[in-house]
Image (cartoon, rainbow, N blue to C red):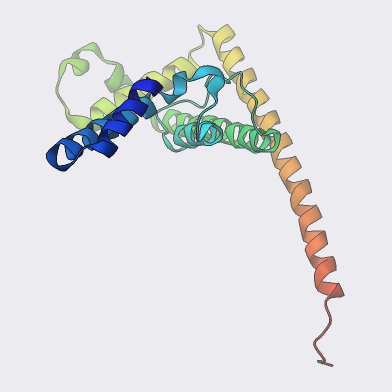
Amino acid sequence: MAHYLAERLLDAERAAGPEKASLEREIFDQILQLWKHRGNWPTHQRPFRETDDLADKLRTFIDRSRPWYFAQNARASNHFLEDWIDKARVLDVAARDLIAWCMNHAVAETSGDDAAWADDDVAQQLDDGEDARLARVLYADISILFEEDTPHRRGNELMQLQNRIDALLEVVSSIRQELDIKIAAAVKSAEEEPNDGAG
């Protein structure tokens, strides 16, 4: 492909008028096609390879419909970058789980007769609006969480949440330690600055 492209470049240099414009357009399209397949280049040696991981992870972080879990690439990456991305992932997953936990408890506390209505077979056949459909989804979600006939599943979910909270606390603690070091360095630096003659 590279030889073909080189020949077309030479042809375009020699051409004139409409033929030159046509060849340049063809070359432009060929280069774009090559660029689209850059991920298939041998040993992943291609432009912007290092930023692809970060861009993918940021897209995942921003897109709340996609989970954080993704396959780690075998290629080497910046250790410090990965450390911060791992911390962001732990924060993201734990925050989502804790928010869901709080919302499920809020829904459970307010359910009462509404939960029975949402679960009623006859009521489910009615087209009673977006609010009722949303309530059915919420109540179905909390019924899974609070059902007494699934203690094993419930126990596993609670342990997963506990593990994520522990990981969150560890990340927050490491960030706090780093902040303490930076604050101490900033204070020390400020104390060592001359007063510029003020007295």
